[in-house]
Length: 255
Figure 1: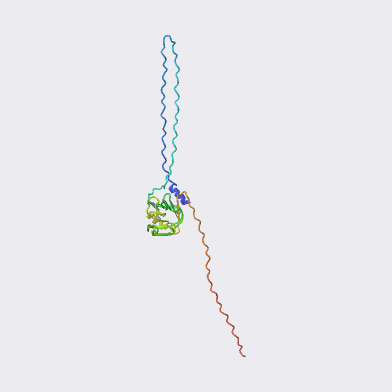
Figure 2: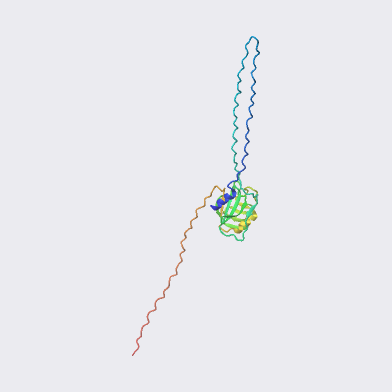
């Protein structure tokens, strides 16, 4: 999808960490070779013949030392988004009119939510999704209910401002605290001002896609068949036909 490609372009897939610096090549220390000493002739006596000049022995060959190749740098993959938003921060493009199809995509591994209009990014924000043991489900959802000042009926009337319900068992989009890591009971918390802006542009039955990451797609559910309902049978009142009047007797008049 175009919006999935937009997310990958925005995030750069997964940000790469800095590569390890190359190790400097260390050359082996030079081999010191002692200088050759000239041969010393033995003392000659009168009775001994003159000593002949000895031949000069060449020094041994110095072996060539090849430096070890530098190690290949290791590329470290760093998990996280490439944007510079801090927990609780967001970006929203204000417009006079928001027209065209709206698409909302939440990505759990980087704790971000993205809003597209006509396949163009109009806003994105930090979020806090479900913590361990209360993970936010992935998949395709629709907005089932909207309430500006909703209170949780599961967790001690906890405030859930600008709530947009995704499931009837407690999963929703709403404003809340963003600590920088998953901390909710399954809902997708957003900064309150971002939740307010998003609330103002969505419609009932608006589709929301929740991904674990941008590389793992989710399967769109098959549409449910529309049940065929036979039209109700309307009883028809019987038509009452009045009885025909008997013909009047014709009385002959005297002539």
